Amino acid sequence: MSVLALPAQPVQGAAPALRPVPWQRMIWVTWRQHRGMLTSVTAVLAAVSLFLLIAGLKVHHDYTALVNCRTACGAMNQSFNNIDWTMGNTILILMNLAPALLGIFTGPAVLARELETGTFRYAWTQGIGRLRWTIAKLVLLAAVITVLAWAFSQLFAWFFDPFLGFEGMNVLAKTVFDTRGVDFAAWTLVAFAIGAFLGMLIRRIIPAMAATLGVYLALDLLAWLVLRQDYPVAIDTTNASLFSGPNTPDSPWILKTWTVGNTDWWRYIPVSRFWPMQFIEASWLLILAVALGAATVWLVRRRAA
Amino acid sequence: MNVIETTGLGKCYGKAWALRDFTLAVPEGSLAALVGPNGAGKSTLMNMAVGLTVPTAGTVTVLGGMATGSPAALDDIAFMAQDAPVYKNLSVADMLHLTRNLNRRFDSSAAASRLADLGIPLKKKTGKLSGGQQAQVALTMALARRPRLLILDEPLSALDPLARQDFMATVMTAMTDDGVSVVLSSHALAELERVADYLVVLGGGELRLAGEVDDLLAEHQVLTGPAADADRLAGQFSAVQVKRAGAQAHLLVSDGGPDRAVPPGWESHPVGLEELVLAYLRPAGGGARPAGGGMSSAVLPGSRTELTEVSK
Image (cartoon, rainbow over all chains, first blue to last red):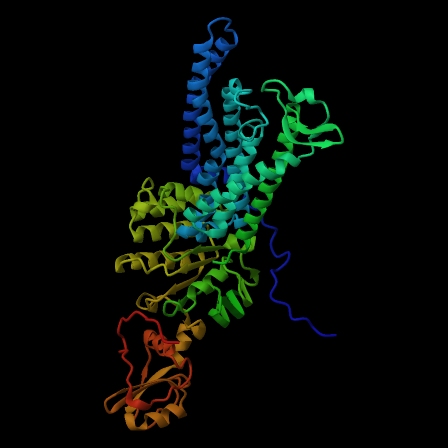
């Protein structure tokens, strides 16, 4: 029998197993290292929130007045259509970009800055070890950013409520769906995860930010144009009366129509399926974010200086 | 116990070997100096020893067989990377607090009193400190972790002579007071000559020479005699380096301790550490080099030269 030549192994049982550095220490570390980013994100969101609150009160006031208007409503209607709607629509467009912007400004720097400045040589040789360090930072930052985004989207949803049913807008419209419920928070989480992953992969902040924007937009388009209509919530019907009448907040999203013999068929998603769709989308986004996080940790683990 | 032990260690970046077939055992309790020109593989070796870099070939263990980068190894080894990276937007106090949070042990009071002795204000941002002060902060944090092994990558390069002396004084104190082993890399030999007790010479990614400084100095000597006899003698002794100056030749030989008989007409001198290192960094590596052409080395014994890149 041959004797196996093994490389030197750590001496077993020579010393009691080390108690690792506690996780909660990373709370202070993460806060201290990223408080500039966290406070500026919070400050921007707070400033926009204040604006949304003030503008929202006006929009709700105008809307209530319009709904209750019985005579000579033309001027009021025109004012709501032009002034309020223009503002609402502009903010809606910005809201659609907000998860990408939040992800770009929070994700890439977490690891790319360490690699750019060489401080990873300090951070990853401390007793806590680079895995704990990375996992704790990613989880803490992701949680804070996601919660902030969720709270912000709730305020925006309230602000935007009067515009539903307007210009064909309802909660299933692409631009609206993304800004409400849990979707906005989920997209922000994914944008952060994409940013952190690409920051570790590309190792430079600015290129990683650009790449994050590109990947995010591609994913968003994919969800919008391809995936969302295939969520298993659609209904087939021959009941044409569902689709007549003016656009209201309850108008369904018609996916396609076709004819079999003399019968017209519709495939549509009713507004009542809003929450199932929200949770389907948030679920795969969450899974994607966790997978990106795991890939980031794997990159950190195998990173060779 | 060996604080760093490597067997056939190699690291390849693309097609280029930064370190190759590197077998070394650095004993505990010493101040080991890794010397060699830029690009010799010093940083690569150190990064592998602290677990930042994964070897392409061979093995490396630390502190008597621990796997590099393992929790136990991270706990007992403090590493100060080249240019002493610190978070420049953090104050010195925040850097200390950060390091305390990232480690199981941290002697805050020792760190604070040491920085007070050095006159480094705790409230100042580390980015606003001089290079010497940044290095001292990094060293203070490393020592406050109470490591068994301190690995310092080019810690002196950014420092002026006075700061170098202060820095080395701190390192020496830690060695005598706390029994810390130190591995230190440098391409400046002058500061190491008085303090290093173990020497590792690297050139072109290969090990050129390693051993206790006292042993190395005892094993080598310089023979001075007529240039005409130089070639014959270079073959007889295994000469590391042959230098000619007019009618005289200086042979650096490795197998002639002080007791070895000196040929008639030749004189024997002890060799200086710097001269020894430079001789081993010349292209021929460890062996005798053809002494033809009358080329004399430009290196003067005792000169305070910094090493420059040697042609591969």
